[in-house]
Image 1 (cartoon, rainbow, N blue to C red):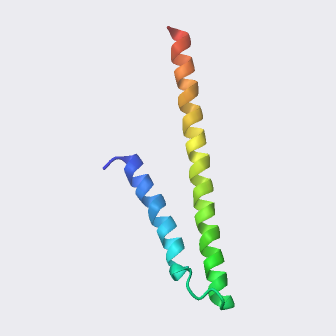
Image 2 (cartoon, rainbow, N blue to C red; image 1 turned 180 degrees about the vertical axis):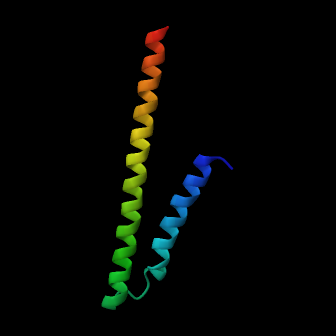
Length: 73
């Protein structure tokens, strides 16, 4: 397993852990459980945003490397 696969698995585990708090989003009419579900959704959104920023930086870096290499040709 490579570093990327390990990183992806870690991100997936974080999302799953957040969603487990929601317990299937059943019984959200109770305020306490509603709050737990809201926290779970916010946790997943936070993870997605972090991943998106990391991908953006990675792809931007790759793009700059390609441009640099092409200019050297």
